[in-house]
Image (cartoon, rainbow, N blue to C red; front, side, top):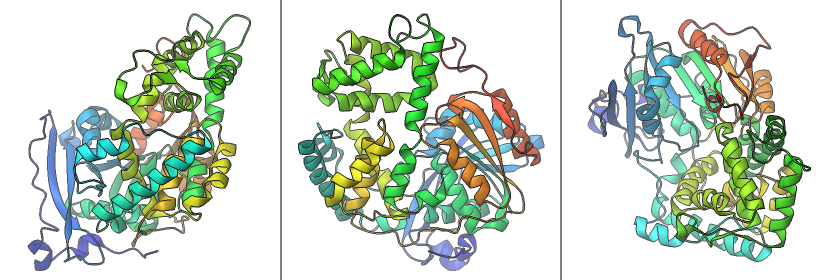
Length: 504
């Protein structure tokens, strides 16, 4: 674990200019271009301990403030993942992000080191070989499948080390926090204004504990518990899964309350929960035909129990998808699992597995696994006990790669997490979030010495999936004027899931 350093200061001087670190950002047109959008690339040290050494590339995007005459400064945002593209976020949703800041901030994000258009982690020398490696690979459910998948995980971890071994020790969240502080300085900001979503809340908490005196405002939405995340891959995976079953039960309960006109699983002699149990029992006996699944090469054209669970894990995070998901489950009960299998196949396509390995590079650098991959029977069982919906998936997708990972992060930060910042940190969390459970935010409010939790009585992940005017107004008041809501404030969502106007 490392003490805070000043990466911006470390990159100053002639030596920094010689390797491109610290040069002014040369903003230009994005590809594709967009109104009020600018893009750029900068160089940062591979290792902030060696600021004059090898450098890597960071891709940036900026949405200019819609009220430039009232501009306060720059608001930085991380969309989560870890490994999601900040450049893509700003290009797609720059206008929305601008409204969150009241139009008074240039909104800047970046593709974190190791990801996307920045210098990225690679496990293959060509996309063709990567697609060939992952073709037909799916999350295992039987012992034979699990043994085969464990060998696949060991092989991919070895390949990642062979191709990107020079980069893997330097993609931890602490490395990215130093990049963020460097960006703050390059943008001429004395203090940081930051918005973190999901994993972006872990990046925010890491930055706050490393650089507590450099924060103007920090808004953390859909909060990760840093004590679990940084303890190790096992605790981290359990934390990812812990709230999923409760939220899925809410999906079934709200479906039942909405009635058959709005939810295809409701009505009749059986409840929605009973119908889901019936489908689960049926799939445990045998797969259901799934003709015409697209893309066909990613599927066996049969819906298995494991694929059904993967489809439900994908759907539960987005309450706007709940009516469609209920219709897909009802179709499977009638003997056609095509739509559910299509969701599962997309989640297990080669591109999805490739993204999983980039995520693993970051999380494994942050905190490695404590158990070896050979212990998978006991460890996976623990995860399944934590969540019937998500346990198997996070076990093989989030824990197993770290159990086989070839290197350790050189510059990670693993606590303490109890900093008191001069200005308060605003935390926002849904009551029913399947990925960053509400208990996380409650704990983080207790950990931090100066934080306020705003609860949204809503569903899904992240909170923006369930719109709330109350939350939007609180976000803007905080980011613009540093006004936090009173302690224990609860915001309602605009509409309930299954309401025809949901999402508005």
